[in-house]
Length: 477
Image (cartoon, rainbow, N blue to C red):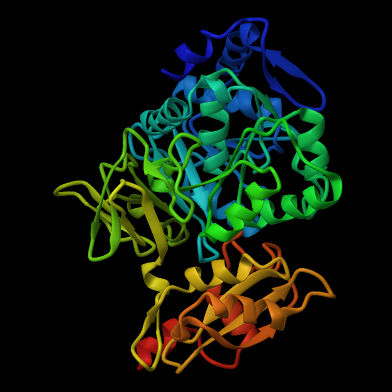
């Protein structure tokens, strides 16, 4: 489906563009086929390139050739990269030095039909690979184009690494199906802290972009100084919970922000707000191909589409036969029941009467105060992060009489106490922050953030508090 739809576009139209080259839709098939032929003898391909035209062409070639592809996130540590390559049985890796053999000869490591293995560091340091068939990714990309319509088919700027499934499927594949020009700016050109993001979006005249909340806040600060970006028509935001107040703040300065929700096991996007159907505070309506239900407050997806997990730990122990964990096996707190093929996401949420889905937090993160009140820390954190003085936040207080927070100021002049007071005004007493500590920024390099910007809670609490992490407190309580 993907290639048939891509090749239907006007041949003279630009499909892919980076700093050094561009490819038109009419030439895309030939460029991909050239790389398909170069994949002869490659059993499993890893791509370790920056965002570029070459990244896309090799990824599409692997998809067309039926060669499992393992995108390597640029934020992975050398140890994480090693585990990813070994556990997926990667035989060849594409890097700036070219295509080379890894020396790995392990066979039948991946489930039959695997087109992509997406690795996410999640909330632990050891990557876990989700095995996806081509059909699952095509379903997501096709549903996104269906729900948005072709009026948003302009220039899509790939801001997140293409190795992140959300950008790969919802940005790249959906963009190509819609006939977008995909602007592939190298990540280094955004700056270490995305300080050049506004310049890149303005110069490329981007009409759509996918962001995580932390990068959205960076862009909002840049808009205040550098002015509006009138070409932008659609900004999808996901990766972690975002306060509806922040969405409205972004829209008030001209940023067309729409929140969505996704999972690697579902090939990225599950639900999405759109200009036609929108409810701030929710993560939108389910995509057309998705069926979900709420069981005991938890979101469960029917027929999620993934084939299983690849476990790095099994390979380190030398047991290749146990490397594949099927969907029905427990992994990272999530599992799918093989009897009815339902995936328990571990996310808490609910549907309203109009069919909009809300996600309130992670089931395993729920704090229970000594007064017996259940609180999702993501909810309180999203309210705190709606204040511009607070750049990052982690809330804790399991088995304690009140909640506390570790907060990262947005600047040296930021008035954190005032920001906390403002947040507390909109929170019930049991969810208010009674005391807080400030810290230096949480970073991926420091091991305190996942690659998509989610805090590693246990590591942060171990580092900044004398108390044990809430999970340990609960287990000994």
